[in-house]
Length: 432
Image: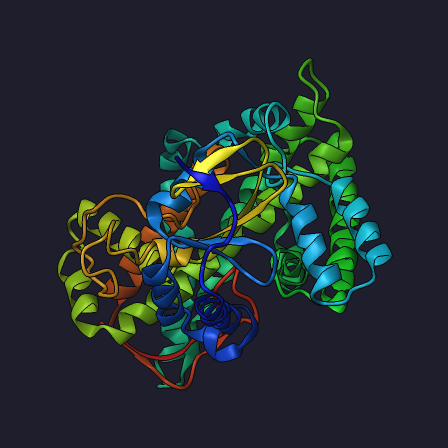
């Protein structure tokens, strides 16, 4: 019979596991390469209670259960994170309470549970169906072609090109910007704003990080409130105008729901794909045999699709996701009670040898099912199909347009782990 969720890990083992976890969360070296740390945790135990207050889950099947089972909820994990920040990081409780009140008033699909989540997601999901994305594919590819042509011009003289600046950010932000209706000249400001706002998702966020996230959110709200007012006066053929029409119809979205949804769709619409492009291209450059494999398979759309799935698995753009126990549930033979916090390490699940053969090896021909990179269950990434289409367009065009892609300098990673990505990816390119 399963026991309750009491940590029976020996004290020394628990301390060692905590050391591995904190190396990932709190050190630049750990964030640059978290995978050896993940492996040591994953192979020692299916789960353990960390000093940051959450149960840590690393294996594919367990992570999938946490993200799919209705006994695990989204909202309440914020309270667990708040306790961590008060008890471990010493942030004043009244400051945390104020932050929680601020962000609780601005909930979106990312933090809601049914039935609110079901209603809100249902109203916007039609913009991201596979059929809708397929209809967008020619335009997505055209946008990518234009940016890669500019990269080719800059590379013609032999100068290095920063892929993050020239392609990984502007490409997905152009796609989601056009879809949502954010004017071209307004888009660049959001790279810094979204990066500051998403610090809220980091387990090691400081008080200054939280203050910055709140201010960034206020700036984005002011922008979208003004844009919503403009679209009310003069609707356009874009998703924001559709959201407003829904709010004015029988199944209403409130003004605040329109704004929160617009911020989420725009931010998530480029953050994940930006990281996919950077992480994926770096993986290819470091594995020239796989780069050559992709080059040889460009005529096979299925092979390109598999390649993007493998790049997502190998170095996931999203590494962590959290839940709280809403109702009693068993996980890996232990019984969990309401109020306990669980952190799923998606990057570790994607390298689980119980699920993937030789998981530390990049193999673009791999066909072993989907990775956990877009999550699972009712919160599965709404824009996954669009991100995949963007990745397929991007990698196939990079490989066909350039005969060689080589690192020109050291790469640098963002100071984050929940959203894993590069700040710079300097490469030299030889046109094909």
